[in-house]
Length: 332
Ligand code: DP6
Image 1: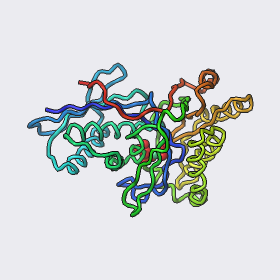
Image 2: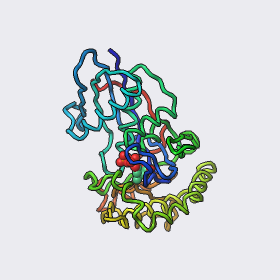
Image 3: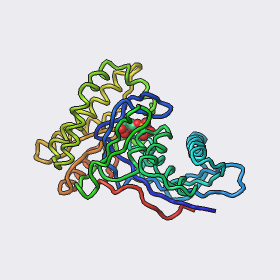
Image 4: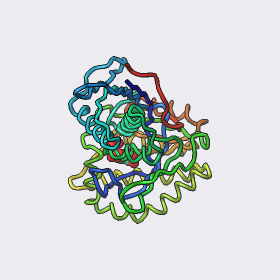
């Protein structure tokens, strides 16, 4: 009986994956760049069961007690286990338990952390040690494309493969390169109404989609350069532009998708005011209402305090760049 337990981080996209060539296989239409986080993690424990007829899937509650997963969550886990079994050519069943350190499905890339952790733990429980590109491919195949970027640490680019069939993971810089922080202003803890998957599907229908594709090569290059040079002013300008454009596309998809809540605008206004006051703070949002404020370590306490004061902000999560997945104490 083999058990593996992995803590994998969420990530925040600087350049977003938005729009897929193949939704089933999460093949993106554009490259994306993200910063791996360190506080927002999923721990996943997988045990290979001898002679079991079926998989057992459990989820830890806020207090860490394990209980049955919802039918939807269990279905997604089993589907991914099936993929990994096919890949390993092994029919075995598993006991799986997961625990998140942060709220799920609110634009904090919980599925990226979750599917990265599941992929790493299950491949280890199967006795396999795939290389980084292969793990990224396997994580992506879960349908959560952003999971491909959560299998390693630092600043990560996910490039399009030569043949359009697969992607290529590139570590632009490791976590030690730049101690960036991410102050996450939670304005809405409810799960989002429209999944990223549906957002990817509708994206090309927006008249703004094509305009973004024209901008993207220069934007990608600007982000790569800003990371290499640790230039927050340059990075910040581009990531705000990119995040606003993602939401512009969502809002002008057919039918439109509105991820923003009034609190989102309140935080964006406060971030602009903080900049006017001389603090380097830059906002980005994934497919959700919550705002990720990117800043230098020295400014983090002042920025977190300013955001906590806003009535619209339920709470603030202080995160930063992380070194990637690591083994973790088992959940059972
Ligand atoms: C806006 O299809 O990876 O976060 O499975 O919900 O994490 P989830 O979504 P996925 O799309 C990610 C969309 C995004 C941008 C990004 O992370 O690149």
